[in-house]
Image (cartoon, rainbow over all chains, first blue to last red; front, side, top):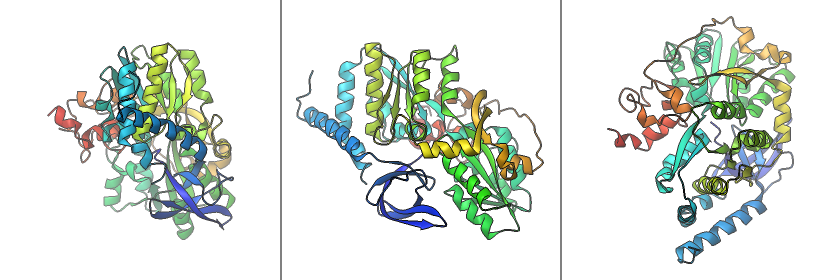
Length: 83
Length: 365
């Protein structure tokens, strides 16, 4: 029920007075309302739930965490992790 | 898909598990609140991958599962009326009420429709001005802003044939109830990442301080959950009890302020009964009086009756993390997703359905 999926904003337009984006989710595009993420721009990734974006993904934060995790994964696979 | 695939990386998962195995010294019981997270744990077999000292129990975070029987019965009463188009998220249709379910209403000629978004129901209302369109507004804080927006728009546009049957629930009061129970054995919580995307995590700091329990806001992919488990174990092993945010790419401390604003404008907090759990004070949302013209409970005369759960179903204990689905004698035998006794077997996010779908029932048969 709280399933929410990240997708990339391809285009933003007004529909019936509501700011709406065309968002791509792994090859499928769907309309997504941007009422709750007024700062979102084309190219941003938004987390979408029942047709509304609920957050704009923080790309820097995601990259930082992922680099840390990847470094950990690399150490582990090379048997270099701290005992 | 970006922001999904990298959080399913096997190498990182193995590294996180190995690191956890080196650090855990004692048994710990952790709970993920959200049914979506339960689903990820089962789908990727994470519960079997993590060190055996760490035991995951599954929380009540499945809105379909906790919607009270009485509310399902009200939905059925409304949906059966000839002037009504009843609109719902798909999972609700098979949830058993006390005597029937929405699918049977549909089979008997009721106009019951499934939509993806509450705004789809607005479109139906505009297309059918001669009919009453009633949307079944369920969900946690994640879904409340979207449902609130639909009601707000209906009022703005003067849409007189659109109403909502609201059965919203809130997560923090349920955690408080679990922690206050003398039977509680949960030592650390993974807080639901999408609920916190909307609400932030200030409310969880209060719980963490009051009950001295570590809480980590977690995401929904396998790496997210393994990292959240690892952060909880680190706190427990070090004797800390704080709120930490694993899902920082989506969750901020304050949460989504525009979403909270629309929720506050349209809904007010109320007491709410949870299926399988019972009444929890201040744990629900209902429409404010200003939106009474769109409140299905005020528009339709409905029978109020308190109903008992089927005695054989253990869902009450499953939803509180006291029992696992496989502890139930009916599990996988008299209770299956095709013929469910209780809601956790219906919803794809219910713990019983997750165990069934990922073949954990082979362990007991």
